[in-house]
Length: 76
Figure 1 (cartoon, rainbow, N blue to C red):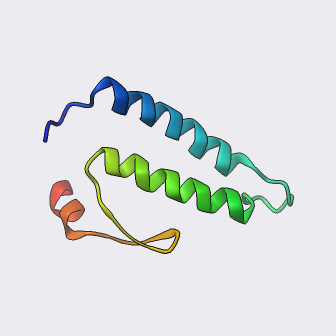
Figure 2: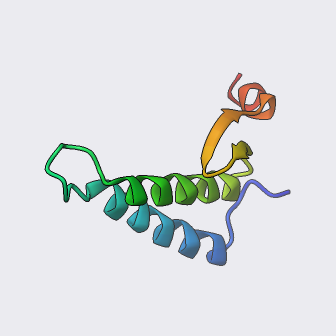
Figure 3: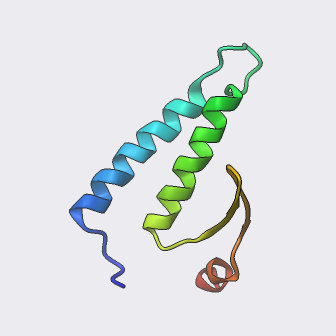
């Protein structure tokens, strides 16, 4: 697989980035943290964002449980 992103991937990353920022900026409860629904959607968007970069998350339910060894090896 190529290390270069294509135009479709770049466009999707831009969309996901905006959605992640928007989801994490919601503070409807005034507690300084986004509401649960927005947090979970942001996590799902983050998982997709990472997958475009060939980073795989071990996902159980809605939240990433752990990052696989593949990522650890990539960062070394």
